[in-house]
Length: 495
Image (cartoon, rainbow, N blue to C red):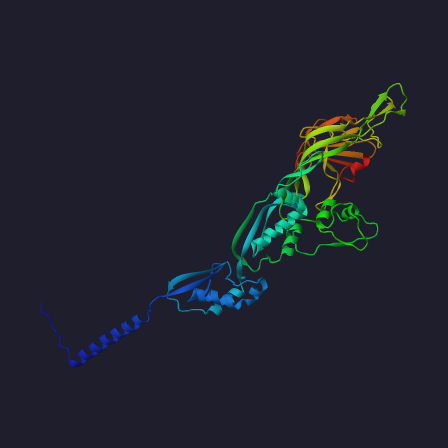
């Protein structure tokens, strides 16, 4: 095998050297274009990158310096970045570095800045659902710069429901002992769980900075000005309350300068008509000993020897007097449950006895005589009238115990007996004279539809079925068919 080696002339050698040099130069230049990575901070807003900065602290200082308006509004010393702003250190080749002012401008147009404060969550608030027509539970969040502001506002709200003197006597264990009659508080507490967390608060939130606004919010659920009423000549508190869909208790709470519905008003006086919507449930447990007048019953004896229409009073009735000991639980000043624990007869009740002719028990009610629907003594925990902005169309009667008897208020026929989620076990009695009586939240129903009953007959037992707070009877009297064309009348007017 023969290898032929060609000689390179000087020209070829020179060209080879030049080409090699150019290749090295190209490689060297290309290599120099790859810079070393640098340490920067990537700025995220709501998870989206809005730029890179060299110094995280400088951005925070710039935000604090230029947001003087926020400092002045809330009287704070420092303003911080938004809660949804994240600044993360990175090693990157990125050369597009933003100034603190550029990042600030991007943030300002998108998200609110923050300040130090307290987020207070009150859990399990009872609120009336307009859609469902009943109470549901919800949470409320309050923002303050100083938690002592919240503590003081809570104390102020408590004093609306429990007089300061009474509250202090309970706290200091200086309540007077009950000798004959009276009331002592056994416990006071806020039913709701309250969670207080310190942290950054968005300046877009409603931040309470003065006690007056927070007092108003905790009591009325809003800081808006409450509706006012100018007293006219002859006005009394109960009528003003009723005409404006308030209970007397709600009126007194909205106007703490009054201590009783019997307080006198003067012409031109301005009163609040705000419907209270407290943002926590203050529970007050009381031990009460009181004297109750026990109204006499009217008993009718039928004499088959007397003609129909004959009537004679055999015995006049005399009211009795009973010393009642009871346990009462209030929620924001309203009685939520009541239990009678002891009774002592001070003066016995004497029934009124009327002799009537005819041996047939009529099914037509007598408007002049009505029978009380529960045992005695009893407690009316909620009267007929406005409460929570709605008309309470009857009486809530408690204190006689779960399973205690419920009686027909007058002669009549059982129109309906059944169950609904609101009324629970209920009974309608048609008194065959245009009037109907309604009994709700029963534990048991002891009659059937179409059955004839006489006043005083046992028709069921007291319970807590349906939507009810505590054991009680809801008792209503209607002129016309209940809830469909008929209208309610305060049952007490019949007794």
